[in-house]
Length: 215
Image (cartoon, rainbow, N blue to C red; front, side, top):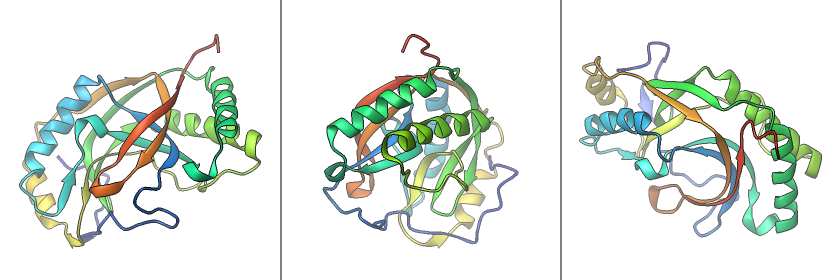
């Protein structure tokens, strides 16, 4: 199924170009939501993966590495440990009053570089990100990445070449029986991320619980 609100471009664009400052072997600290143990979401992603696996120009995201990007922090070689722990402490304080996220994912949307699922409602994700950004600003006085224009999404496959989007649309028009997924997200993670070899992988460094009023 294709998200009826999406308006895909005529072509998918290769996702795997190197952004400024990024290079192989240079990890990056970032806040993400990850989806371990989210069985209903895994069911939905697996259904789309089965349909997409025949396409030559997309890289499927393994269930283990599903993620929703929230906010970058900085390159590991530029952020010292004390600064990182201060950011986490400030984020823990600001996120303690926010409830866990009860959300629906699906149907699939075609983005410029990826095939993705949007969460609904999106508002609580924006509130979590605002809390993280406020924490970073309080500690560092500056926050990378603009606040405006952020659109929470969970990518389930990335384009690995510039390619016509029509085969994706043709494939998905027959997937009318795939039910959206429900998920409850109880924490946000600060991770050490690398993106070598056409795959995002990470080491979790800190977890901050939502609604943890004892923090």
